[in-house]
Image (cartoon, rainbow, N blue to C red; front, side, top):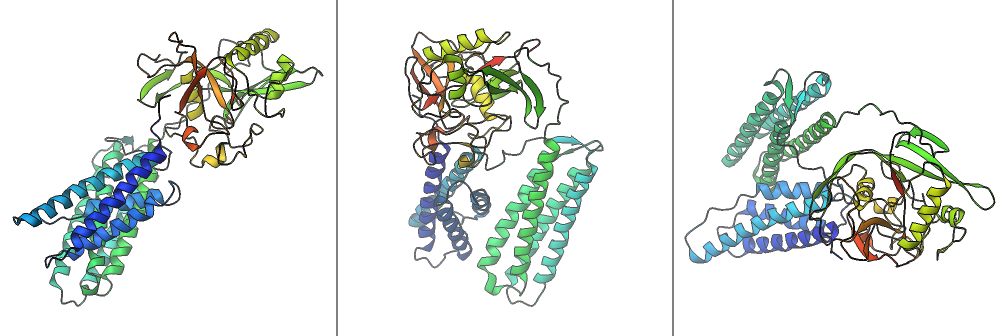
Length: 510
């Protein structure tokens, strides 16, 4: 089995290293030295406090905001120039090395959090959007920039109060001058082109504003006792205002860059469907099989749209060229029993997923089911189809940030399977893609994605009797309950934590 790159573990390691490096920097700065820089000490103290808080937190809650504040604070650290004294040269060199390490750990931590959808992806290098049709949103951005100018004016007035500290004036004037330049640059992005606005450039300018403000507020807090009354309050309000503007511009950017919804493609009712329709998740079709008492057992299938995605570990782009049908739940015991007349499951319950079935058993089930309904041609999905459907357009490892809401796994299952549809579906209306039971795929096991099909087709066995299954189960921990996690077993293995779901490539008339 290939060990996955787990976001939880990566996040924990990065944050532990971050905290250690911050504490080391603080110790170096606080060592007896008449030239200690109180501003630098205050900034690194803040880094150490934030690092300790985020290292002890789960990935949820305010971790993304704390990581952002950490990054801005680290970016704002102004290290002393190297000096010639041998001992101090070592100390300064160590400070710079640790500073670089802090920045690297933040990048790793943000990536780990982003892998589960908690942080937005980095802004695009260039993101032009047309002015036509977006005037209201662009005017809102311009109004937010006006608010920043008003806040700068208030800060300038506060700094003009009586003070005996000349350096205060230089500090405030330097910051205000830099910020006014950035505001002018942002306004230029809104007016430089008559037809489009480059939101990528605009976002970078606002990011610079946030970094400048973080540096300024850290310095103001360190010098608070020697500043004019009201400067600290004005600076803190300034930081709040810049963050508000940055958040607003990010929201506008996301909105304007979001893919435009395409008109729904007309879909014919499949020949095998007993019912058919469209809802908020997309197109669905019901397959109805009568059990031994002649009562219908209904299995819903969802039409999974064509598209592309990148497999993890290493990234391998796949294009699903044709929409396909997929069970919206793992195969239930009720459906298995209606087709096969028996129930091999360890945990009994008609609405629970069938388990304790090997691939040879499933092949017999599929043959019998397809033979009972005209036009039906079901099969196990390929590994690529399975992951594509599980992600449902998400780039994160889980299709919802709260795993408890979407999956039964070791922490909440109580040591058994549960009825299907007991947790929230993904955005395409698929339930239990993660957790409850692992799901067999049609692919043979391969140690890497080298030479894997780029069209999502089944990757045929490489002479091995090992087969792939996906999704995690009631028995495993959160590490395994991820869209990209894959495991393997012999095709004859039966286990009470492995089930399956079926799918079918869409054809004309179905």
